[in-house]
Length: 638
Image 1 (cartoon, one colour):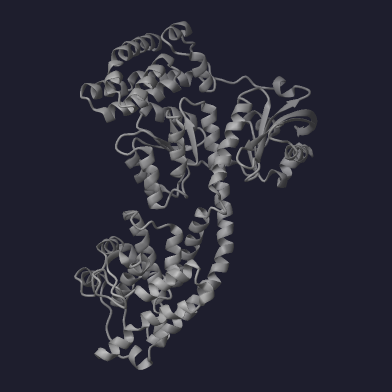
Image 2: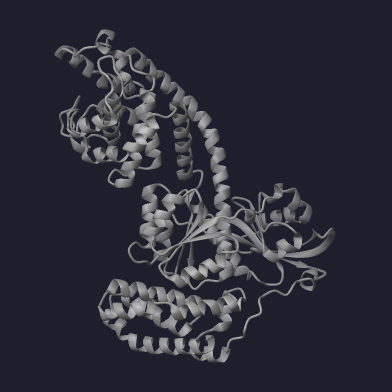
């Protein structure tokens, strides 16, 4: 059986607070490789350099320079939001903040203060589910590629017939595809003005193959004339754009197909120019569809850099110079910028093996389309997963001395508590558990019966009990399953999984349970409680690890965020003051410094309501409480 933890996945933690990063790093470092970024800009640099090595991003919302939402927006612009799952984590728990995060592509949202065990399990679940999704995507992409390859083959045959008559090399269509795709992706990075998606890019690239289909109607003696055209010949040559569009328009049964509409745009208008001096219709500016604008500049660039019967090939540099100088007509300045930006990559791609490039481009585009296809991966699925996780958390605490389990229906995944997994000698995570010989051997028929019983439950009666047995240490042990089905409530409620506890009749689990935990020096609990520190809750949040909690309290004493807040208030720097107060709210919440948490929570509410005088007037009380807490901690922790 494949264990999730056999491979060390990398998690990128993005938070402006050093202590918040330290807490998350301590939680995750045993199971994952952890990288950190102190702001959104740094995070994006790391993502772009190491996107293939990062399995998950844990992202704060409120940060200076670039907040978490801006990071998500940029990830969408760069087209990496579907490749890299993001868990938002923040002390902002209002529905508006959470909804915005999901709308921008976050896969989960964790509110501070949080339970350490919950963070660890949500991280594990997200990585596991995303890996499973990627495997399904790869399978679907492979199948779709075979179908798409046949369609593209027919388009390529048709376009190559035109090239053959025109005396052009067989690589022209492939070159147009490559240049078009690179330009579109660069344009997508630069601006949202044209509202392009990866699906649009794929469509335009495919349609670009038919841009010169109308040349099939041009006489050979004109099409392949080695010298300059006469005015009459040039007018005949110009008719190829209208002829191609007419051919496509006559295919009436396909007129509503997106590919047909885009192909028509490109065929008819790829010789239009941005200043209105092109043909056939003299369109100007963005009245020319962006698909035709892109293919127009791609066509000119490839014509300049390729050998023709009437000319030698120009260098890349000379071609760029001619296009920028308006020698080939006027183009959209933004597209000229994009062409300049992609110069190095463009030359590399065009000089590589074209058949290999075409294959890679098709596979990548199909994969991108599948990822973004709402029919295959509905946006509601991740909400289902979130609802499932919440339902499971409400049902039981992760560290109770019994075996806990969760069976998720879509995709099928069985999760066992660490205690249960160790007791049974299996991985905590098993995809497609009914197909696993190991899981079926341990649960005998109990798992199948459990799933059948869950299917018969209802929203009003989600709880049920089941007697069964499991195999552990070569012994068959009788047990009782106490279960609850989790429902996604909508117009039509959906059963999304089952959670439960396995009670062993002979209590072998509790008899054999080892005593865990590190020996630590006990803190003066009474003194801490007097200054509003709820140590019981805090240590519980840190999974009973008092040493780790003590370590984080020491970091709190050395943290400079409170000094930043005082400075911002004195300078009336509202933005920095809000960021600092918000950060301190999250820190104090996680460390269960309840008195300060309540004060900073009130202050943040006032700041967000633009009641700055009231928020600033709280500083006297906040400073007095902060000093009492830090003095007590200093005395106890020295």
